[in-house]
Image 1 (cartoon, rainbow, N blue to C red):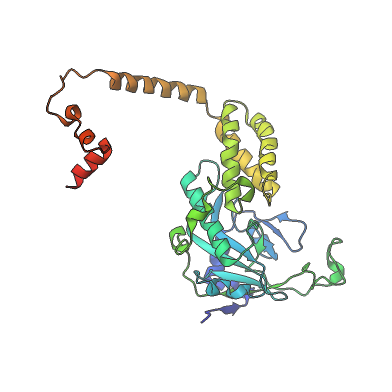
Image 2 (image 1 turned 60 degrees about the horizontal axis):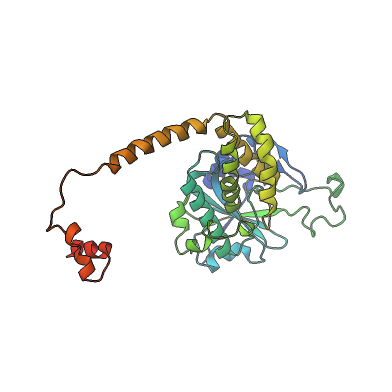
Length: 332
């Protein structure tokens, strides 16, 4: 039935998938022990915290889903989905984070492949929907599967924590780590099996209903034209003008992205546009189009052939279109 194995993270270095998780981390990820504030630390320091940033802002290696259900541990099995590489379960309410490792990391924003980013966003949205996960969860901070539980004195908690009842209200929701026996990683094609990706076409969905990486895509595409118009300006000037536009786009989402995500998109566009001169590229493209147009517009010196199909137009007699006529002819 379920191939779940509860593991002790104390020796995470000797557990292949947890060691891989550590190797995949950004050089200096965000991390924290208490909800409400984050720190930037080296990987060796960050891995000791309860919550950690799994992906670099511009590279996705892990898809993580937040399932707020008492039976979250079995969500993948109950819905006939591929097992995640790990599950970090809250042992108080059963809610969990499920982590899927991607075989080939996908770039997000900047000069990344637009098709790949769209594909990632569609798979992420469809899989989240199939798991019954929180569609507004960005995956920026996750329950660290390598975290070793610690006995905490409530008096040592930050001032914003509920020291009288911190365990029940989630301020100190320790978690258990489970492995599922899944393969080391998945391609996006493997994850998308049996998912209705066409339902989540970013072009067709209103921006305010985007979630996950769909928000990154929509913000990037919406912001690019403004950046192109500023091409050749200084990097700082482009950032200054794009930031309020990006903030306005982000505020239209049902669940806005965090400020850091928006800032990264703005800066990636600014870096590209600051070193580009689109007026020159447009001029060269116009010249190329003019040459092509002149070449294609020349009148053929060959006189028309009275018996050719282009002259007799047999499709008119058959009452079908020219394209249909040639398609039928090709299939004979």
